[in-house]
Length: 201
Image 1: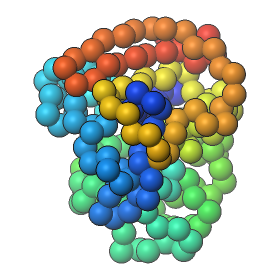
Image 2 (image 1 turned 90 degrees about the horizontal axis):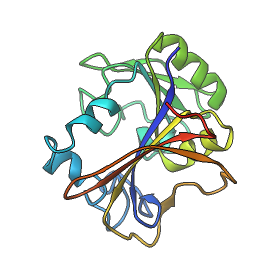
Image 3 (image 1 turned 60 degrees about the vertical axis):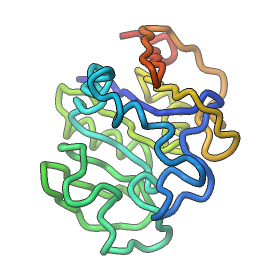
Image 4 (image 1 turned 180 degrees about the horizontal axis):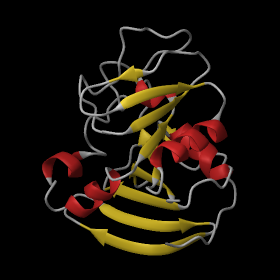
């Protein structure tokens, strides 16, 4: 069985998105690409981290990471990423409203889970087999998994910016011991990798 990992692009002051996320501002107001510039402008310099992020056998994400809506699903909405999302694997989307499985181009299949974080993780583990499962976000979902001690390896990609407001990582998580595994930086990001709760790689 693989590990449960989590990769999060985060500001120095701990935010993974700004306030008021919506269709025209998927990462919130005044954020733009500031947290993710390293992915798009320096892919070669950050190739090892990008490869790790994309190597999971299945993913779990919160509803807000899939789309901006609340309440019943807008069935016309198929995610932020267009016809071919970047996951190329099963993705289990947490929510409170049922929706039929959504198959996309390139191997990504979205499964919508109403039974909570443990059910989503169990289904993702079964789909991933011996490969890792990645908790993809957003902040509220990652915080739930961290608080439940269900993440083995936390990889923070710290962008050199202070956002000052928005969706903050670690809110409500409580005291958690982290074991340093690796650190590396490029011109636009510092990569930090930790084992969670003493569970180093």
